[in-house]
Each structure stands twice: as C-alpha cells, then as structure tokens.
Amino acid sequence: MEAKIQILTGNELRYVNLSEFISLVSSNLNQVNLANEAQRTNETTFYNIDDLTKLFRVSRPTIHAWIDKSLLKPIKLGGRVYFSYSDIVELMESKKTA
Image (cartoon, rainbow, N blue to C red; front, side, top):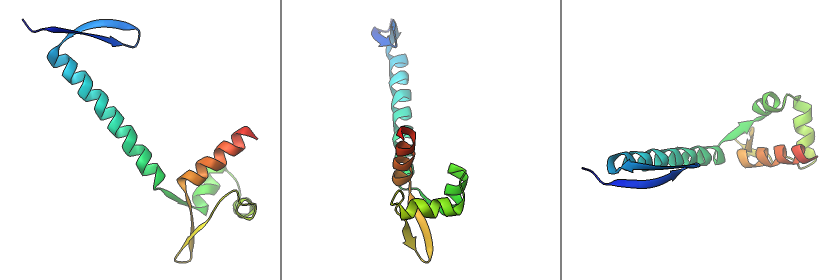
C-alpha cells in the first residue's frame, strides 16, 4: 500500500498517493513556467503604429499626439517606428486611472 500525502488545494484538504502528488506538482510547475514564458515574451514584444491603432481603436494622428505628449516612447529601427510592450501597458494603466 502506497503512503498517502495530505495536501490542501484551494479550500479542500485531501489525501493523495505519491504518484498523484508528483503529477499535481509537475502540472503546477508547468503552468508557472508557461506563465513566466508568456511574461518574458510580452516584455520583449514590440508593436508598430498600425498595431496600436487597432489595439486602442484610435487614428494614426492620435498615436502621434501621444508620442508628442511623451505618453509613448518610439523606438526607431531602420526607418520604422516601434513601441515596447511595457510602454503600452504603462499607457493603458494611465488611461485606466484617468
């Protein structure tokens, strides 16, 4: 008979065998790893002006006005303009509290 391990999941106290415990821990670690990978991907993602017009449902002149007001920091590469994910999140947060 395999030993039982007592675990608390949410508000439920349960007993599971060792193999089920390992499976639960492995599953949770995979979820954490996927969340961390998604966060790292977003932190290194860049958007162009067309992306922002769709995201915010605004015109190109509005995006340029936000640049002029220093609400967005453009990153210029090879004649193209990009914006970092973190700057976009910051803009969204400022608009949410405004």
